Image (cartoon, rainbow, N blue to C red; front, top):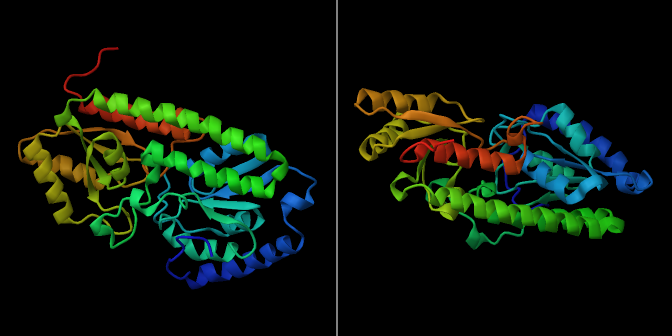
Length: 324
């Protein structure tokens, strides 16, 4: 069983889908898998979230076709695998997921698929002491590890290792791909630090719809406040909104932020309530939290998503706007 798959049982309808998918998976397993049967063609890799797919493509290069199930604007906390998703998983040589309960509603599907093919949590080599364990998350780890770029770099080794196990002939290429992408992430990490350091310390306060940016705050010295908790399964309540309004008004926060994969209602409620109490706070822009931007745009890559988020934060929170 892959790590971090201690999740709720599948619903009856999903169970029916699993039966048909598992039958297909059994046929594939009996045939030895695509990696062995197709004469050395590209591996088929399926990931849950786009950030993992981006890393997988960088590591694999031309030796794998990597596809993400969840596209822009999709909340992985609430995502349920469709029939077509189950078929894609059943036909994959390798399945990569985040783990740490991010893909909660897909847990049973991943467990079943692990019986016939590698199903790997990219977070598996990150020691527990380096993970956030917020008290409100009931003893579970915060899954949003991609917001600490230095921590996200640690996911490349499991990806390269699993690809090499399936395709030993190109193991050196996978190692080189991981190293090259790792260097890009190292440069990105330094850039984020530099941009956040350009903010006055009192302006390093990030208010968002849900508490996805905890790793970002810890790594780069930003105080992070989410209206909802780490998971978006439960909607924000009136007390959550009032708590954030009190902080926004008291600290004279200049800007708060919506997220691409979370409803903007709670953020707009904070804005309206703060205005009623005499403080005008702007919505500083849209951040990409649990999903990247549209394919084909800069924000549709992990590097571009991080840069967009940081520039949006800094531009809205700084003391005076930057001149072009």
